[in-house]
Length: 266
Figure 1: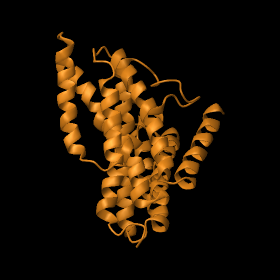
Figure 2: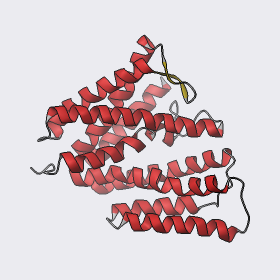
Figure 3: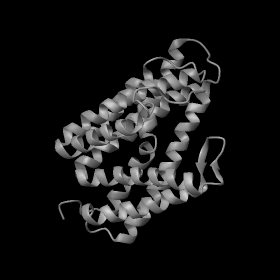
């Protein structure tokens, strides 16, 4: 019951922010999610035994979020981030174990979290609240179908080492639901895109969402934790809630630039 109530509160909050507030509301909401996610990511990295330089990933990821929100050259900042990361390790003056892994873990959240979460307000700004909610509803529909299809028909494990409860049958249910939900809502909120393309995009969103979920499970297993934090009762941490979206939102944002060039004003 706690999980259900928390989920309903989160859904109401998301819809209220995305639909009821101007784009700046989504920017603030996403920024809060970014800060919370960075704290959880840092904890996972440290529990995994990587000797990172404190604060570097946090600052670079927050700055990358700002770069994208204000439409500044992200490629330039990503290059600078690599230099800053390497420089911070050098200035610390000691050789960490697994130096390559340490450097990579410091730079990775700049793209994974800073850029990934920034695509939420970018979609809201460029394509409107309905387009953003279409993606969120597709993800919810796919996740729900994966759970119930897997629970009812699941036999073959999907990725036993990463998530023992996920099954291939559940994944297939998620793909079907992703195609159906995105095609259905897309006809209403993404006019001008052929239905078959919406369905294909829905399948892609479902596949990438499963990958995002499994990736975050891998991070948690490497840190030997069940949840990224206990922030949300019954749901775990922020990363546990947005793991799939961190993969699906960038895909969706890029796909809309190709498929919906006319935008909501057409």
